Image (cartoon, rainbow, N blue to C red):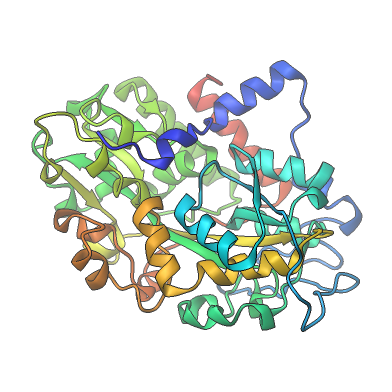
Length: 418
């Protein structure tokens, strides 16, 4: 069986990180703490004077530069080493070696396991790093408004032109001042089509699949507050970024009912548990790993994936992207820009994707070319994303501190804090 990099990564679940943090007496970062000097944050899309601006598609945000300017033009790359802060093994070693050969700089990698851990480390010692690989959208605002990352100088990133138009000036970072996309993915429903008799892709509400008692004990949800709440909110047809307490209480009750009737397991290692579940809330990037972890006798064609907006328009569904960012005070910012640009080169992006599994939003790397190269099985072609899909889906976005705390509280109640 092939060993995939995500297996070696062995990421902690959010619950496990919280448990260990509590045992160690570690103070987890709060959005309020990061933005203490910035005033209060709005609880919905839009902004408040001096505070965090919560980006929404109908409320685009231009992240502030102020006294945090980008580096100057025309500077030579530093000698290195390039210090990356990221998930373990999140860039293919072959690509890293090619970068080292081209720029003559070594790469040092410091691992974080969760976005929360990343933010905590950025608060205490962010300037120890040159590049973050990568940042989730719900953390972009807190890092930028908290002045923990620096604006980019696009003159060092000409390959940004290879990226989908939607990311040239995204609503969460107008002008792509602070971020450049690394990967894109959907969150949908993976299932065993040789076991599940219902055609989930034909269900009026496919999210009901997580509550099908026929498969009690064999249904898994992802393990994190946002994705777990999203399963219930999407089933209800509600906003996955809602701050409405009545809606959130209804979602909590739906989840508590599911815990009792379904005996859900919560994890994000579906690819490493093939044969142990019938239905799994899943990220499209991880579904691409299934081909490497198949138990003997189980074909890849036994698995199907449903992303409702694509398969059952106009049903709602999650779509998102992760981004690169450069810490403020990075010792090697030119080299960091060069690494971003290197990974946006179509050839390097394709090589990296063949190993990492999460799709880069590069214009020339289309679903057709991906399938032709055999990077994804034909039977799972619908895990592949096109730029137009972003107009169909919805994204988990940054929440105000009090709302974020409420999501985490509900999550702990639902999962029992395990």
